[in-house]
Structures are given as C-alpha cells and as structure tokens.
Length: 428
Length: 118
Ligand SMILES: Nc1ncnc2c1ncn2[C@@H]1O[C@H](COP(=O)(O)OP(=O)(O)OP(=O)(O)O)[C@@H](O)[C@H]1O
Ligand SMILES: [Mg+2]
Image (cartoon, rainbow over all chains, first blue to last red; front, side, top):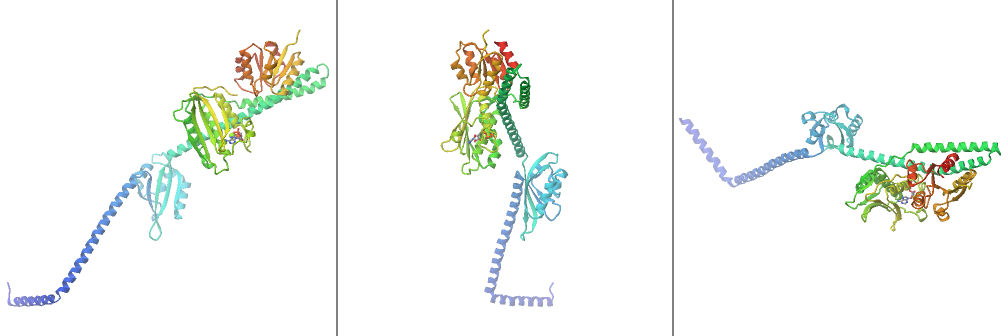
C-alpha cells in the first residue's frame, strides 16, 4: 500500500535516477570505454586463470608420471629429509621396497641406516653420514641385509638436494643390487687365483725337477769315480779308501735330499676330458681381464667357430695359455703405443687345431730363438725361465707342438697345435 | 773267459767316463758314446754286448733309440736316467728294456743287474 509520503519519495527517487541517467548520458562514451577495458582485463585474467589451472594440471600430471616412472625404475630410489636429524626416509620407490623387503609403511619415517638393523656395516654407515653432513655426495658399496636376513651388495649413490639459496634440504639416494655381479667377480677372482697358483706350483715343480736332474748328473759321476777308485785301491791304501768312503757317503746324502725334494713335488695325473678350445680361451681371458686392463693392453680374439672338441686336461691347457699371454704382456710392458695381443684359432685340415698368440711386443732376438724353450732361460729379472718349457711339455703330452716365430710387423707369434681326437700322455 | 762287452751311451761326458771306469774295475769291457746316433753308426747290430742307455738326451732321445733297437734286433738294454717320474720305469720296461736304474745308483746295484740280464 502506498501513502502520500512514500509516493513523493518514490518520485524524488525517480528524479534522482533521471539526473544520474543524464549524467551517465553525458559521459557515455567514457563509461563504455571503462567497461570495455575492464572486460578486457577480465578476459586476460580469465586466460591467466585458465593457464594457471592448466599449469597446475600439467604439474599434477608431471608429478603423477614422475611417481610412476620412479616406481618403474629398477634401481631403488629414496629421499631423506634433512630437517629430521635422524635421516628419516620420506619417499621410497617400488624397487627400493623390493630390494630391502620392507613395505612403504615400514619405510617412511624410518632412519635409513636403521632399516638394515644393526647388522649393516656400521663403519660405512658412519662414513656415509659424515659425507652427507659435509653436504657432499656419497658413492660406494656396502653389504646390507634384507628384511628376511638375506645379504645383498648395495651399490649406493646419495646426493644433496638444495633450495634456491643453496641450502641442503633433502638427500636423494639411488641404490642398485649388485650381488650377482659381485658373486661373478668373486668367482672369477677365485678361479684366477687358483690358476695362478697351479701355474706357480707347476713352474716350481718343473724348476725343482730340472734342478734335480742337473745335480743328479754330477752326483752320479762323482759316485762312480769314487767307487771305481775305492775298488782300485783295494788292498793297497786303506787310508785313501777311507776318504773315498766319506765322499761316497756324502754323495749319497745329497742324492737322498734330492729324492725327498722330488717326492714333495709330485705332479698330479692329468685329467683328460673333451674340451671346446674356444670356450677355454674365452674363460682364460676372462680370468686375466684385470691384469690386461691394469697393464693398459687389449686382447683381441678371432676364434674359428664350430671347432671340433679336443681331448685334454683343461687346467694344463689353461696354464699354457696363461704362460703365453703373460709372456706377451711382459713383452709389451712399457710400450704404450703397442698394446694389442691377439689370439686366433683355426683348423688345419681336419687333423689339428692351431692356437696362435700374437703380440706387438719387443720380439725375440735371433740368438735367443733356440734357447727360449730350455729350462731356466729367462731375460727377466724375476723370471724362472720355466713358462715356455713347461708349456711345451704340456703341449707335447697332448700330442701337439709349440713353436715360435717373429712377427714381421714386430712382436712375437707363439702357436701350438692340438690333434683333434688325441689323448694325453704322461709327461716328464 | 772273454770279458763281457758293455756299451755306455750318455750325453754327459763325466757320467760315461766314470761309469766306464767303474765297470772296468768289475772286469767288464767297456766302450762309451756321447749319443745314440754315434752308437748306431759304430756298433753293428751283430756285435754282442749290453747297452746302458741314458734316456734324457738332446738329439735322438733314449726313447727313440730304444724303439729303434727293439724294432730291429734284440739287444739287451739297461736304461738309466736322472729324471724322476713315476711312469718312467714302467715305460722303459714296456718299451723293451731289461732293467732300469735311477741316477745316482750304487755300483753293486748296477753290476748285479748287468749280471742278471746278461
Ligand atoms: N712373447 C714374447 N715376446 C718376447 N720374448 C718372449 C716372449 N715370450 C717369451 N719370451 C722370452 O723367452 C724367455 C723365456 O720365457 P719363459 O716363459 O720360459 O720364462 P720367463 O717368462 O722368463 O719366466 P717364467 O718362468 O716366470 O715364465 C723370456 O724371459 C723372454 O725373454
Ligand atoms: Mg713366462
């Protein structure tokens, strides 16, 4: 219901509006300009907001893909927060969980070093902590234990994550289970040491037996001379006979020493089996790989495929390869421009396999060619001069030959033959 | 009674000279050779006599010599060696040697062996 007063005020309102409208009318152009520009600003804002939203969505997608990628990685990945002084883990990926055997729930918030309980290598754990606390990154290997107690070798790399001011806020770690590699390394090391050992013992035995042979000869003649003289003096000079008897006794004493020495170094019987010579060469090279690398040399191989098996003693044949390869490495020592050693196999007709070891070393002076294979011949300060003579005995016992020639391009070529389907004789 | 003939083949001069000397004090007729080749060229297959043969020699080794002897005539051979190896004696006897002695050996052992086989 409208009373008079309200009608009046209504009119006056209308009047005011009218006035305002006329004022607007005056500045209509100005105003529409303002509105337009405001609308434009709004549009820009809208676009911006949309961009932000897109960006956020993209960031989210990125986080999502990163998380998935981390979980797909085969290395264990984890993040440690520096704020908590106790190395507590705030993130770990799937591979990490699998490696240590704990669930994510067990891992998050736990001290990284306590995950492995108190059986982990404390010395290394301390070293890692010290390195990290100096804001340096760590790289190394340690022996760890899974939840179920299984050992594993952990190849660990931890580095620092910094904020804009360069302050370390987190550590990010990547760890790889290198147990299989380690085990293989260990096996190779063991086999290598065994081969070196038998080769050394073999050389020593050969050395002693050659020495024994050389000494036995004069002992034989001394004994025979003394015995002959003793008999000639029968009934003539008992005093001289007594002296001769002393010589005889001492000769026999020396002979006994040699007999005992020889019985100490009895050779074991060869163990003859079918052997794939290419495989044996590859295995032997694998055993010597470290020596070759340390000495900055390379071994190239050219093995004829599908060679027939030979019958032989693998340890003995490995010794031959080892002796030839070591000699070649020695010959190339200190010649950095000559680094290449090559091993080749081939089939000669259908009867024999040829194995060739060629180097680019110092080669062999003509006057030494004939002496190489004799006992005790060496040009090395620490050599026994047994490697080649023992190798030749082994190859000859296998029914083959071991020969040498100089490489016209420099260096030496040693090669041996092994008959296909041969056997092994006992060698002396 | 004619003296028994002994041939000695050893590449070590001292060994063959001393052995010859020793065996002559036992009343044997001895002749020494520095190699198997020399022995084959100087002694006919028809000459009687026992051969004492060193196994470890450069050139024609004792083994090859042994094989050559036993491929042809039956000469009695005693093998001597300064090598020590388990299978050596067996191999020598299998190849046809009548006896085997490891150097250095006793005069009596050698003489007994000679008298036993020859
Ligand atoms: N590949 C080669 N190149 C040049 N000279 C070589 C080669 N192989 C061997 N020789 C020479 O032959 C000698 C004898 O070699 P051998 O293997 O018998 O004994 P060594 O190597 O001296 O000592 P070891 O008993 O430790 O093997 C060597 O000292 C060296 O002078
Ligand atoms: Mg050597």
